[in-house]
Length: 544
Image (cartoon, rainbow, N blue to C red; front, side):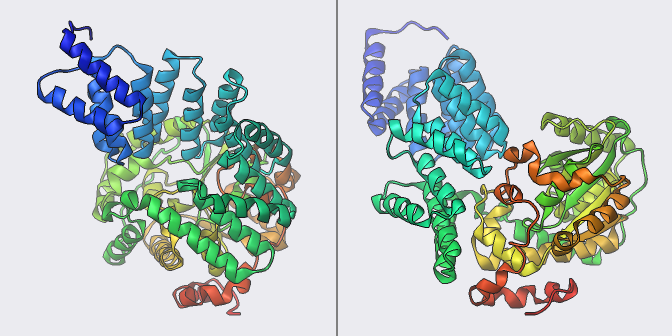
């Protein structure tokens, strides 16, 4: 918005801009405060205040200032970029991506804006989109170290070691300390067994003291992986605990509140369902908006083998699958904010149910899956908690429940490095991981008793021991003919887009490396074994 500026106004703006250029954001914000209090309104003043607030971690307030700046300004890439950063820090990832896209539309040759898009796509675990954005950044600026390092790390995540090393070398040629490139090389060294190289690189990285935030979390976790491969399990466990402490410190402002506590939410649902009568769900035409699609929800608990199952089923010519996307978010907000809200779903009109199904299928397609005419597999382990929504909205859907030795599951959740969200926040201590597992399994038991759902259990250990037999049973339950292509899951090109920590394991094909891992750490996990004992016995796993 154009405005006439006096000579005094111009001097104020020049002084604020100079302070920002010199990195003196506190002075710039103070000058802006004074001018705004005097009645002067200009985008730069609100932007200056937002930058200072962002540096203090006050992203909600900073975003409000940026919105004021945006309203006063012609479309401005700098403001859109700053808004994208705040939105990402607030976990509003879709909005952040749109902000960076808007900024890039204004400055299409600005490589940094594409790199920022890639960063947010990584936070959203959309690794294919992240890779495309980072690749666009280096098309515009071939020696740009940040996206080169991120591409190296993404390649390492999917087990593409040649590209991991190539991108890392390019990044380090420009910036010898680029952290993502260094961590990609460490990942490759640990995976390939070149432990001396991994040790040297990790020791140097951690000794420099330059790693911050998420990079230090990853480095400490990789040190744990290295010690694990060296069979130094006590040291490995200590490294995993240090890494998780780092993540807790980073994210405690976001996830320490009661509203973000998934463990307490699961317990509250357990308490409600223990006394609730069976809900009067009714059969309806739940699949109309996806054509003749057959519908499968693949659930259980994270690290129970759901990624392997999803990739196996995705190899079938009649299957389309979607990996860990929030397809039920709209329904959860409407019918699962409080346990008693489930009664609203049981009593909902056909029109309301149809509306939520349409929202579900629109999300499915937004995430890149086209289910019509196929068997659609929606794989999100923690949708176990949302089984009442599935039963109410999709009463004809088949439920596949992945099981694995609870001790291996809990140890794996504690050891692996996830993007931090309300679910994975629980995995940052061993005790909360075990108690969350216990709560989710109790909830699943109650759902089986109270909901009209059809569930097929499949054990990871049995799948590994008798792949053809177990997959034939699974296909029969779903309504598929068995196909030999199911055996070729490790050769599927889609492995590179897997967002969970399982991607490199899947490239090695079917193996027993994850079976019984807990025994090596039995001393370290001893404090939580009493929490898991009931489920070990119920699922028929040997006590020792």
